Amino acid sequence: MIEMKKVGKTYPNGVQALKDINIHIDKEEFVYVVGPSGAGKTSIIKLIIREVVPTEGTIHVNGTNLGDLTKKQIPYLRRKIGVVFQDFKLFPKLSVFENIAFALEVTEEPPDRIKPRVMEVLDLVKLKNKTRHKPRELSGGEQQRVAMARAVVNRPAILIADEPTGNLDPETAWSIMGTLEDINHRGTTVVMATHNSHIVNHLKKRVIAIDDGNVLRDEWRGAYSYEA
Ligand SMILES: Nc1ncnc2c1ncn2[C@@H]1O[C@H](COP(=O)(O)OP(=O)(O)OP(=O)(O)O)[C@@H](O)[C@H]1O
Image 1 (spheres, rainbow, N blue to C red):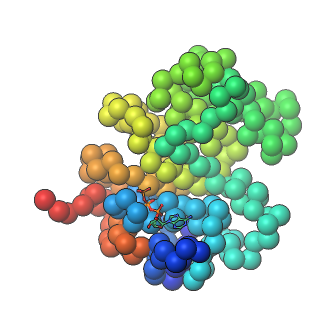
Image 2: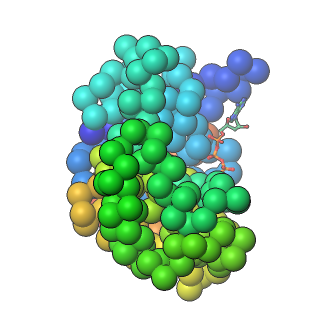
């Protein structure tokens, strides 16, 4: 599903963000990527979605060697990968319904299929009663749930979440984790970069710990850290 072999990333300014990354993530796994600020977590995510290219090594996503992709093929890769961010990145002028429908319109979903599918994902994230609201009329947790609904509306094989609970209070963060687990149980692979040690230590999953551009640990049902 996601395979990185001997992947290194040196940015044009000479910063070596990733050194020798070897990771294999299978279909339907739920994986935390943890590590201190600057460790390289976001760089791994950007490589998976082909926002940046590696300086060394090879990456396969869903059987495709990203090194073989032409610029024109990148949008097709992105359809297989949903992404959510810490700051939600919703369109402020569009309603909840329109924010999600937009993702189907750009992939040219037949118009009569759009409404049922949007309502289906709003049901999944428990927001069917807020379809006409604008993002500013929602709480942070609700906005993140809209972002998740939008990320999965095209039925991607993989959902990448970069610090999805970063802007949320602890209780709301747990509700977001419930939604991510529901998405995972429906067959989507979830890769979540996080600093939230409480969640990682209590909702046990595979943990890939990155430090200084290297994989420090890769453990099934691991912990956030083993210090103190
Ligand atoms: N576009 C870029 N150009 C140059 N250096 C970069 C770029 N993006 C990231 N870096 C550097 O690469 C290293 C890894 O950054 P990255 O954003 O992957 O870390 P991170 O683990 O996601 O950190 P955080 O938890 O703070 O988001 C850092 O030293 C960072 O300064």
